[in-house]
Image (cartoon, rainbow, N blue to C red):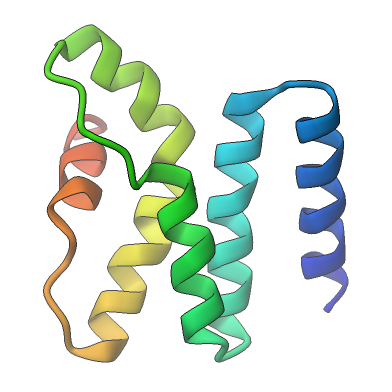
Length: 99
């Protein structure tokens, strides 16, 4: 519960100070936190919010976006596994940039 409160506080701060990359990263982290609390639907919303965008075709740009989306993509992979659903292609694309 404390981790959730801190993540929400970080999202508010980052939004207020226009730190879009940090907002995306922390939303993914919040998705991970909610996933571990068993709040799967809420976790999916937060995880998707951090990377559910059209995938950039430029490789350099993809690396930049992937860094922001890393936590959300990881949360989405675990959520998909727990639900027995396919992993979203965008999550795999973002994570593939780190391999």
